Length: 152
Image 1 (spheres, rainbow, N blue to C red):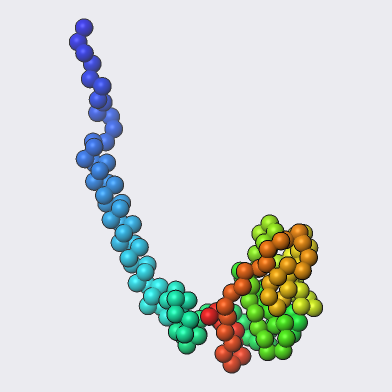
Image 2 (image 1 turned 90 degrees about the vertical axis):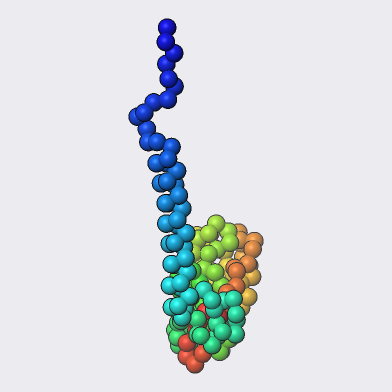
């Protein structure tokens, strides 16, 4: 009985597979290089946080006007909650509750409130005032320039 070949010709040749993998890797590398160029040239790229001095000078991303943040209260803006615990004092924290990740919703009387399980956090430092959360909200650096609140 003649022996049968274990190789079938129905799939692509090894050279074809290797060439395609190489081309895909090159495309990924070129795309990564290209996207880095665009973000660094935009003026609002990720270069600001690396140098806090230039972040304030460059102005970071504008979050809100100071008039939009009530004294003793705050406002949820995307992934952040910006507060004004005392006149002219502005703070920012992650809007993600440390209990189960719900977005905090209200800021009243110096307290940031999560609507999911009623965790409460200090609008001054993000510390837990009432559980079930046990960890404080993560602080974010902001600057105030004139009447604008910006990411640092």
